[in-house]
Length: 465
Ligand SMILES: Nc1nc2c(ncn2[C@@H]2O[C@H](COP(=O)(O)OP(=O)(O)OP(=O)(O)O)[C@@H](O)[C@H]2O)c(=O)[nH]1
Ligand SMILES: [Mg+2]
Image 1 (cartoon, rainbow, N blue to C red):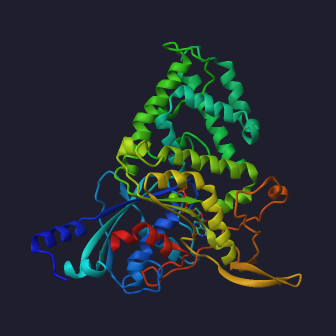
Image 2 (image 1 turned 60 degrees about the vertical axis):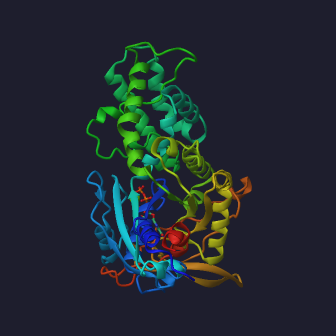
Image 3 (image 1 turned 90 degrees about the horizontal axis):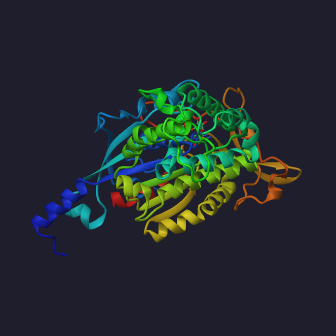
């Protein structure tokens, strides 16, 4: 086969060398974003020449990754992802989980690789891929839909939801308070602040007592570094249909703060998170929601559907319109799959795929490639079998955090479709928090995982081909 002329070759090489992939790690609080990023970074740093580490990540299996380095931050506005701290936590004795995230963090990696086949030979065997990943508190993700809503619309839907189901008893104090101060009453900043505090207390109770997910605005539960806390002193209010908020009224004050929050906090955050994003992984802790019961399960589903509706793939996507994101691959991943044994992980993958059937069709219609999987970023358990009542059952073995003894854990059967009413008759299993495995700090052994390699192959394989 004739080689391309030098000019064209230089262009090809240049193109390959300049390739950057921006990966959006999308997931509610506690879904496993930080664990995923820590494991991904540590495993990539240690993968060169070690095909066994990520056997289903083709560039690694084919020994085409020559080396990975962690780069200094390419922007001075976002602090670097604390790789060292995350690894130190996993290398400690006893090892422990990295803490929940309180602010924006960014990991910049460069992978040096040999392109496959003809391109590899044509470019002299070396190319580079830059990978950018952002970590953030999961609560903030739920602010994205607010960008497309007015204060009036957001108030109406939030109030309706708070008067319903598991939320209603928790919302009482806040609702009683706002009922005493009509929308048309004077815009007193102290009243607004008190209403905000009661509303925030309601959100916190929804989270801790009922394990609900659809809690907005995100900063009410996790404020991060806000220069002006008064930006947050608002909450939804009952507004008369069709009435305009009178200038100087409480409703006008709340609406102005809602708009200031969107412009001053939410928009800048998503600009940093979503600008130029081309790959997305959506992490969902399906097992925790199954465990928490029907209200929590339904609410988690509503929360990620709300987010995905805002992500809305294709030309009308909010992300594309506002931030120029153009996502061409999306992976939906049920996390912490090491809580269940192998066959149940297949069930979990099928359940994940079922839960995102509609967003999948939408993304495919917009020419994105979509897949669903079950993964464990940091595998804490081993699979085994037990005999219970004369029958073989699959179990996982792991050490619950803070306990001195490994347990043999038999989780319930994971349903492959969203569970029918009858499923909730008796509780699904109570999942322990397993202690993570202790790893060697110096990139020695990598981090044990389940399906991280397959996920990377789907998300990055073509960019390293
Ligand atoms: N067994 C197991 N547990 C996991 C795994 N990944 C995460 N976890 C558990 O889930 C918890 C939350 O994971 P994080 O990675 O901190 O979640 P996050 O999405 O970053 O959460 P926020 O920072 O609060 O938004 C961890 O502290 C672990 O207890 C996994 O692969 N296996
Ligand atoms: Mg985190």
